[in-house]
Image (cartoon, rainbow, N blue to C red; front, side):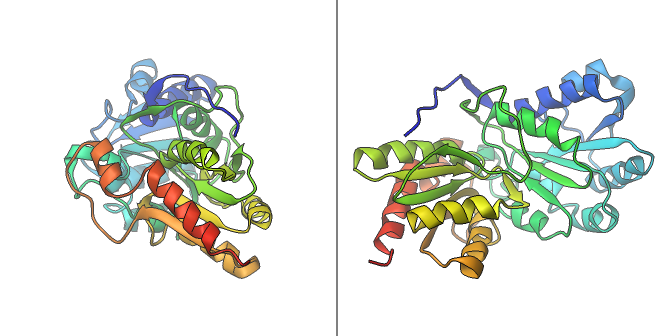
Length: 319
């Protein structure tokens, strides 16, 4: 497998903050709105540098979405920021009616997604947000893997016209995507070529997939690792090309298995080239309070689970 040196450890929300600041310097039409979580979303640097383009709406997420939709009518590019639970579940009606229905150029940026929110517990650990957002017509859904990719994605979505859901997290994770690698919306990123099984991973599970790849290689199994940073529009060509070579697949995501990346891949395969697929994700359960590391282990969002799923997929291949 190709080796990916770890360039450090940093939370993906800091990548968003760095990307937003860079956008502020590049594009005067970019504005930022936050629902009382400026520090948690790492939007404070933008606020300090561009106070006239930063709007603190307070704990009023639904109002924030409406204000952002209105701002976009006049050519501004609003980036909204709050926790993923409040960015989607709490304001789904406003997103559907005020943003998606009329295809407003609003960027809905969500931190603290998934189980890795940790000690705040099940009420804050939304695991359904990808499903909610990908169902909205015209909504682009992006879930980057590390600091560098999140920064690049933040910059890239400002150039894309239309509503975007950008998902990232709180815990520090390895930085392994090159800083200068361009971010292409809708274009999957091949990380390691293989011949026995395709592993499609997104977000925090991409690094776990690379760890699993190393374990599988030591056991004589060649895994192909593909970073699906854009869940919608999905790179169906990359998925089909990979599975045509390996004959089976695994999906890995920090999300419910219902409605997430795995179901999207299952649809692609069933409609075009049926093949064994194993899903690694949360299996119809809410989360709980705990450290991010302990929760990822308990709910099977780790390299060991990906290895097990890969072996199951390979065993199901037609002989």
